[in-house]
Image 1 (cartoon, helix red, strand yellow):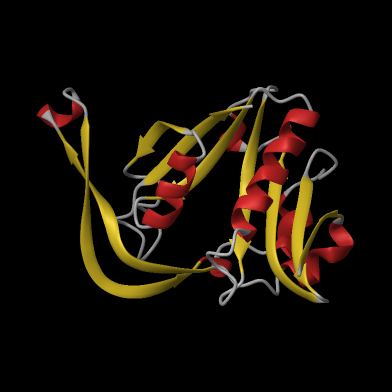
Image 2 (cartoon, helix red, strand yellow):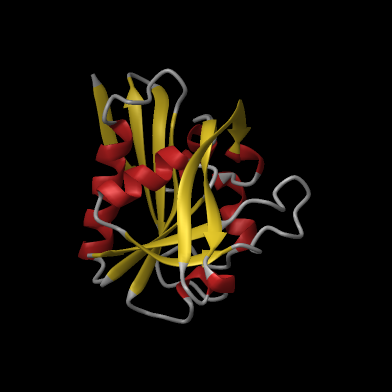
Length: 191
């Protein structure tokens, strides 16, 4: 049986044991209509399957090096016995956290991950629900969630949760080798 709990920073080493592999079989190709003035069109297109390891970009053990104060952050984990199999982070009001855009009523679903072999069992949903409940408890009005057009599973999951696509940045990763063609999608969920 999977156990879920809110944890503190002492769990960061275990948190980082949870893999962040995303299986990519398709992506949302974004087409500009009338150079973007007529809107954007999203079309899911198949790609040669590959696995993208997001752990290259995200480690809980590095949070304190990146941000001065984690007192407004919440961390959740799922365990199969002693084995960590899922994790999520919600970042609250934090100085220099650009995704908050200076807003005090906005939190960020900073990270959510489920261990390979444990996906599609409701673990991600439960962690997401805990993250939303924590954001509400802390008095935030909205949660912003980042994903990429290459992560169709995440896009569909956030849409299913009732989040609305609020921003598309086709150049967010332009300077990052290997990610130049990916688009950043920011979803907003009213809490």
